[in-house]
Image 1 (cartoon, rainbow, N blue to C red):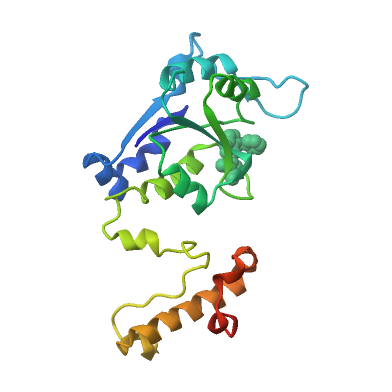
Image 2: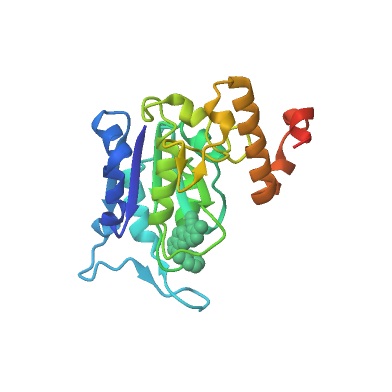
Length: 243
Ligand SMILES: N#Cc1c(-c2ccc3ccn(Cc4ccccn4)c3c2)n[nH]c1N
């Protein structure tokens, strides 16, 4: 997979070169290129924004600059690519989204700032046959798209083959079965007079699986009842429903 990110703050994306993702890039499991949007300005001030038509607070990012940038980074043509535009007005980005995007050959992220990007940039991309997803990482307002891109790139990249040391981690993490993960423990057996639950030290794998499922159901019911409501009818068996 190749990932391109266009932004006026390229350094915001430096964390993509660190740790797990940095190692994945070094190992050739994915490519990441970050582009400074100001490269496509032609004025001495390198202006990327202007006042909104119709008035209102803040500024809007100019279509000319974005148009030239995306013409170069995401040229029209038969390449399967997806343009992702983070926005507070977007569809929710979820684990399901991450899984779908993990199958893409190319993802191009457009990081807006100010009050966002002129709508015609997205219309033009769609008119050029490019899949455009406007997505939000949560119901709160950030200052720009860069942090959202860090979140989404990590969520997608960890699903790529070979990126995680243990592929079971991605298959069994939160949301993989529609539930939140339950509590985890490691050594020592007792810490500040708090003991690890006996069942986890007992070696009975069926009992451990049951205990973990029960804790996941309890936690999901307590913190995210909406996820329980969204489960398919046959997702919970009688033992689950008794929790
Ligand atoms: N994903 C996501 C986001 C964002 C986000 C993403 C991109 C931009 C580009 C500019 N702004 C500031 C801004 C403030 C007010 C109205 C419009 N835009 C962004 C915010 N906020 N919250 C999320 N979950």
